[in-house]
Image (cartoon, rainbow, N blue to C red):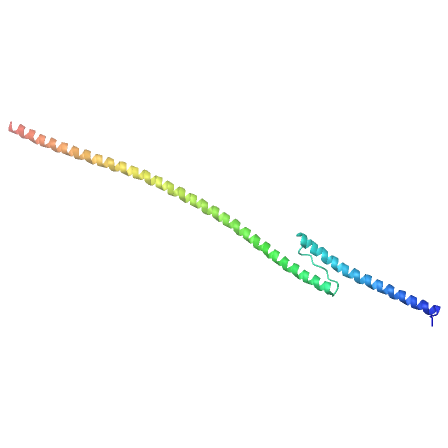
Length: 171
């Protein structure tokens, strides 16, 4: 039996409605999936280029495999972001410590220079004092010799005076 005109129209209309529904449903699913994949692609492309903003996250609208993948990538980005922040903080602390060590090193170097100059001046003064003491010792020795000679001369003079006085008294 062949279908009547009305039945054929209903069948063709139903088939067309089914196909339209199928195409609309497929288009909606495709758009939903491509939006999620496009968002995922943009974020991962930024990260791959090295200029990615680690504060950006993939917006998740669905509850499918792509959403699970996006969530995993978001968690990974969060961990990387946390490590970068910690590394930046550690780097800043290291830089600050390096500046402090450089300042301390300069201070120590300055103090060492001052101490070296002090020791050098002290040695020079010591050398000058040594030379002065040696000269004073020589002078004292010479003076002592002169005094001894003068004493001997006085003793001789005193003996000659005694002899002379003795001769005068006998005369």
